[in-house]
Image (cartoon, rainbow, N blue to C red; front, side, top):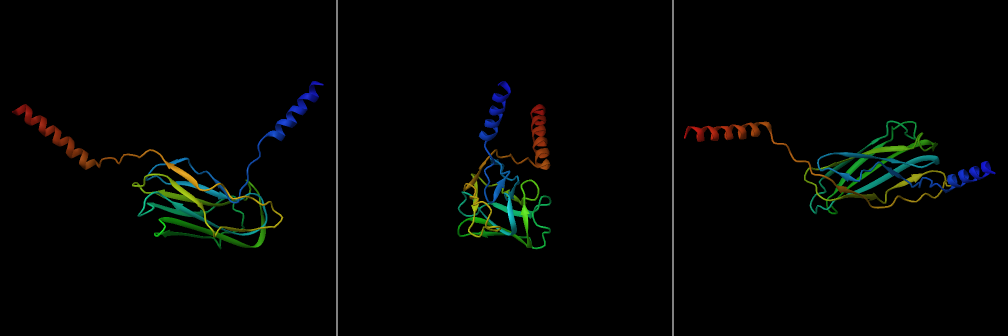
Length: 200
């Protein structure tokens, strides 16, 4: 009786545990905060997809600054766990939309024959690098743009989009160190002033 109760408890625990909430695409590794002047990265992945032949992912970044987003974005194809046999057709195009004060990043690739993308095996599309300017203040937000598209089997689950917008709040502002020359001049000036006082 004891063994049966234990087995039922284990089965219930397994069934009750929350499964990974798959979205298309998966945005992985976004930090909660950023430091002005310090780049950060995150990955764009896919859940399990059959007959996967192409993708186009548009990310639109916004900041509170009204004249310049004060950040650069770029993307590189994943060096491991990439779903396609090669990156020959890979493209990454960041553009500044000055009117909307946004940076758009469009990444895409395709392959001639469909592949099966499997989580943890060949599911990573790109690493996105975000470079906030030292003068940037306030949150960085980004969301998927209308050019986002995935070509894969119609029999795959109808994966939802990730919750949007994704927001990275500003963390600590690192003080700019004093240049060595200025520091030495300041120390020299203090020593000269002290010497004058003693001589006076």
